[in-house]
Image (cartoon, rainbow, N blue to C red; front, side):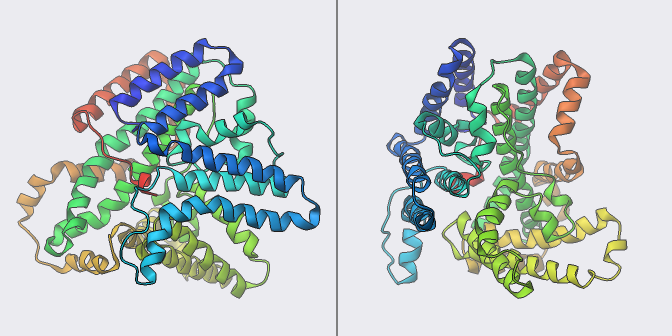
Length: 458
């Protein structure tokens, strides 16, 4: 069930009515039921998978918390291995088999939606219980509500138990203020998805589907268009998730902070997919040793973390290379910081530094989007092919180019604090009127349909 689909709007309306009318102590159960319907709408045969992983986490966390101190570390390792098993089987079994020459697929079913996000969320819960950062829950209902909460279930944000579980202890009533603010944030995400991500994605998909035949301008637009598509698609989903949660008074962490305004790779990973960045730092990089054993060990830890982060995105060597290149960039960035940075780079105006750095980000995104390693060169080499007739190209792709231009013009304004400020300043009636106009534009552009979110594949 897509956030940007008509069926979801009907689902959300029914959920909000029920949530507002039932007893407060029944609301977590309603969240579990609604989330089950939400997930099962895609494929009812897979609806038990999040329940299975949550049951594993519930039992294993208790098993760890009751162990003698000398055995807790071993139990944690076993628990993580057990909880990763469904993810490895569904997502990586075929990839691993191919490395050993087995071409016939071992797993023929589709990848269950959200399995990566569910696995990482619940591993965070088990590790936090082990560390003593969060108490072990004896309530299956609370852990299920945390796991299944439908706004974040499919594509994040990746949550820590302390960020969400306490909020289920006293869920507030539906408040008009939260409804308006949540709807405003949701509307921004809807606009990103329907007006920018989907049209730009259609162009990008066509080029990546036949990279050998793309002309020069098409290749250039695809290289710069995919960063726009994936940001508006993924951050649009996050906006909608945060907005839906806020409608019932639940606060989710933001996942993006204008990443294309970054001026370095370190800055980029503080702004892009923030909850994943923090997860990789806290549950892989720091346990590996972080920066505690000198720069050489730190470099190895960064590379290992980013390689695993790339592999998390998909069972394909393109994701591994993408993660590895980001890891190498982080190593170089940290090395430059230790020697004082690049001479004169800091004197360049920040906006120009962001433009310069964006060229690297856009190039690395080619590895992320390409279906295989061989296609990467086909896309990049397309820049050197003959250019088409400029007037005809502009006429045929005017809306896509306008959408990309609109994104870059407004990217620095993409901040939930601005949305909240404007809603409060304008007042609810004016804000709702503006939102209605945005919805009309978005639905008109999309002609009432929406493409699948990119991160549903991960």
